[in-house]
Amino acid sequence: MENLSGQHLGRYHIVEQLGEGGMASVYKAYDTRLERYVAIKVIRTEKGDDASFLKRFEREAKALARLNHANIVHVNDYGEQDGVPYVVMDYIPGGTLKQKLGQPIPYREAARLLFPVAQALRHAHQH
Image (cartoon, rainbow, N blue to C red; front, side, top):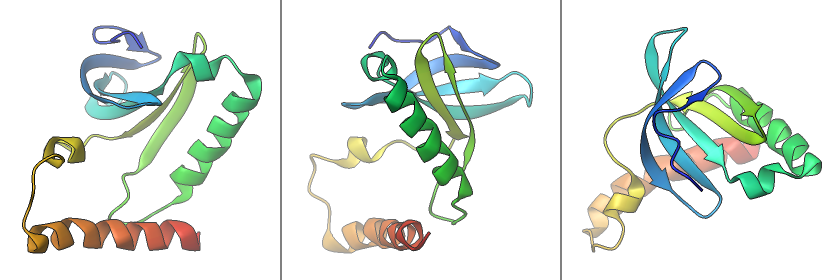
C-alpha cells in the first residue's frame, strides 16, 4: 500500500504513517473540521474492490462505534474515498504495541499491559 502522508481522505489531512500491518495502515491525521488530530486506519485497497467487503467493513465500523469502554479506542467516523475504506479513531500518542514486541519484558509489565486488553475483550464479546 502506498504511503498516504500529505494526502486527504475527506476532511482528514494525513500527517504521517504510524504503522502498517497485513490488512491496513494506520496514520496520524488532522481533522480540518474539528481541528484536532485523529488516527485513521486505512484498509488495503485490494480488499476495498469487493462490494461485499465494503458492506462488511461498514457493518463492523458501526459495531465498533457502539462499543463504549475505557480500554477501547473510540471510533469517530468511517468512510470510503476512491475505493479506499477507512475508520477514524481517537489519536492516542505514546507508540505502538509493535514497538514493544520482540523484546522480553518482565512478567509484571506484561500482566500490566494485558489486563486492560482482557477487560476490553470481555466488554466487546459481551456486546
